[in-house]
Image 1 (cartoon, rainbow, N blue to C red):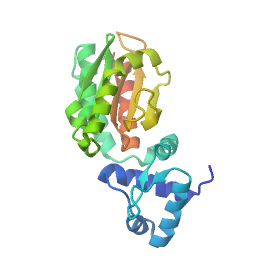
Image 2: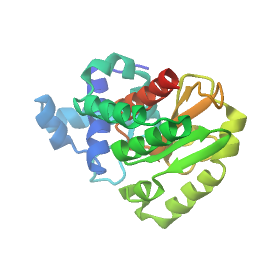
Image 3: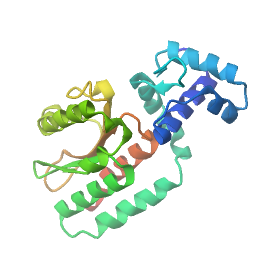
Image 4: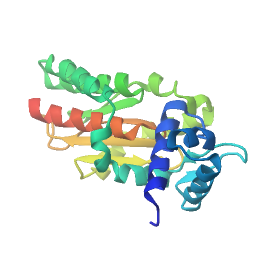
Length: 236
C-alpha cells in the first residue's frame, strides 16, 4: 500500500483519538498535534480516505477509521509495543493479583475474564471445561455505539452463536483479532473479537478474550488479552 510515514502517524492518531472520544476526528485537532496547517491535514485525510482506511460520516464531519484502517493499524502494532501507555502496567498487575489469588482453575479463569471486563469496558469471555463463560454484557451495552437498539439486537444474535462458532473455527494462532466484518458470525455487528488461546487443565485449546465495538484501543486491549492468556497458561 502506497502510504507515507506521516499518513501512518495520522491514521494511528485518528484511531487512538476516536477510541477515546467516539466522535469523528477533525483536521483542526490533527493540525495542532502535528504542527502543520489544517489544509495539509485535510489533504492527508483525503488520501487516507482514498485508500479506504478512514471514512467521513458527514460532509462537514471529521474522519473515523474503517475496518481496513483498523486492520492496517493492528498489523503494525508490533512496531508500537514500546509506546503502550503506562496504564497497561497497572492493568497487567490487576490481572496478576486477581488470578494468582484463586486456588481453582475455573475460578482463576473467571477472575481473569472479570478483570478484562473491568479494564476494557468490553464483554469478556472464556472457555471453561467445554462451556463458554461470559461476563460484562451490561458494560458492553453502555458503550456509545449501542445507543442504537438495532445494533444491540445484532450483537445479541452474535452472542447466541459465539460458542458453537468458537468450537468449529478453533482459531489457531496464539492471539486472534477479528475486526468488524472479518468476524464470520457477526459481519454487520460492527464489533471486534480479540481472543488468546491457552492450555488449561480443561483443554489444550482454551480461549480467553473480549468482544467490543470496533472502536478499540487495540494496542492496550490486545496486550491485556495476550497477557491474560499467557498468565493463565503459566499458572494452570
